Image 1 (tube, one colour):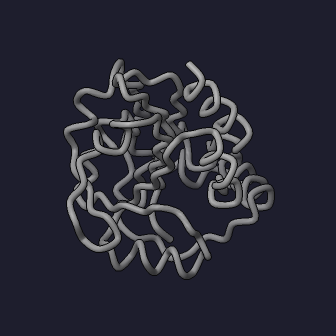
Image 2: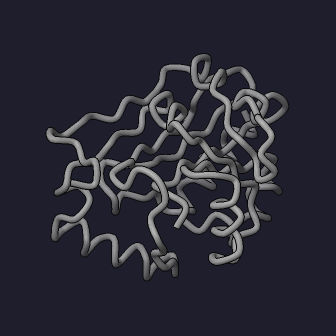
Length: 133
Length: 53
């Protein structure tokens, strides 16, 4: 996902963006600089929020299987991202949740493998719907 | 290897954000933030990255 490229559209929709990663605040700042990302970044050092969000740890095949690598390459090209040095638990997979002030979760996309990343358009449409309801 | 799971795990979409909201993360300055604060006044899009890198 390249949320930062659509940050203005998310903000115009009336939602808050938050990106959570592993590691330390220094790692987050390094990531911000190296990827030229202008988003609120947070770190979860013990990955408790990953577990609470329902994200999983991948198998070797879900990280490095041929189909996963091929799809990952297509996603990298689509989103124009480059893979850097891994920080934290290398097999931890991520996900996206939209949470409303009442605690409901109208949208969830939890990665089934390392290449499973939702398109920005899908998340943006869900964000707009969440802000309108 | 790489801390991978030995068997395929299932993802678990939470039914609500009650438990999730009690988790605390650190912002870029090292300050603790409760996740629930992120959606207190408007919907939040939360993205968990595999890793910063």
